[in-house]
Length: 516
Image (cartoon, rainbow, N blue to C red; front, top):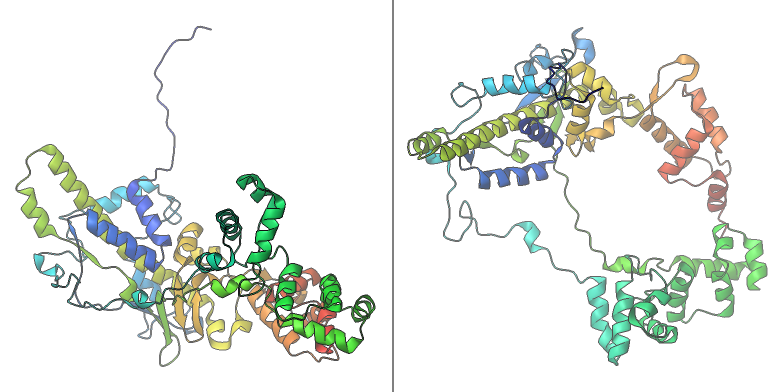
């Protein structure tokens, strides 16, 4: 067969992710801090964007119990709460729109038609230059020259900085200092040596004895326990500093596994002391710090800023309100656009200005849509998990992304993005939106299913309230849960128990019996 070029027409379907759609999807999954940084970058790059300095008003939706109306949760004024979202366009992260299966390209065309510069959009747009921020002589906006609270934090000395400052007092020769610096650089966050000493010898071209001599000197720094190669050596260094590293204690350190197993008889035999001495020695070891490097880790507690506020309303139900102070508010300055358009000299300037206008309009649209989508998802979560907010975690229902997506007619991936790094302040505390999603565990005899979080809570309460003389085994917990209508396998109970941080029944029995 001869190979010849030819032209063919083929019809096919494909998903087109336009830059505008990619931007809208990106904004959905950003946290409020990341979103603020992104908007700041856009404000610097786009001359047609400016901040909206008008008074902030919250956007509110009320949720009441499902039993108040057959059509779903209602507002306090009796209207269906979901109707407030009907007029807002929603972006489907997969490029589909609800059940109609519209492509992303068609949706982009529709949005572009609705949100052109002269479309009369109800989104806020600047019409004059009065909205620009005031600049104070001190170089700060609004005339406030006080530093932010994050700028007043005291600077802490890192472990490396501290050890380098001590190096000169411990070691005098330049060659040993070089080895000391190399040892410092091998420490992990816990203060342990990572890697082998042989690798240091190879890198520096020195003998193993030289490295070991420097290591022994470095092990005398404060706090004791740094530069250890394993847990046994770390504890030995601390006991030696306390002058408590006698032969019996050394044997105990050489048999830490027996101590972990609480094998008192074996330890008495190995250490050659009576049981009372063993208990005293174990108490001394427990008072030591197995990770001395943690003394140099200074984590600044970051306050979680909720994206949604939830509060009860008179007559029953819940009120949801977006945290407007965390939402960047920007405007499109149409007057500046009209003024600059009069002085366009070439097609390149015109193209640049049109691109800025389109980008600014789309950002305003995307921010509005993001806020609306968050509120819509949060309201449905509150409606689905009404029992949790009224009775606690024991009443939490099993919930998956599909349950929310089907009700609000969005794709699961969109709901997943909306619930990532978003928090809601509720009467029971601040929770990430993803917290309310949990797997389903079937009920006994085909009864009502239970969420994994409610079962974990029940297991935790059982173990914390168990009689020290009657420790509950995993099989016994399974039996008790089954009596409460929860059909849970033994391996599931063991997995949940481990996740909650509870040891096995054998270990708990030894702990609560006072062994050691």
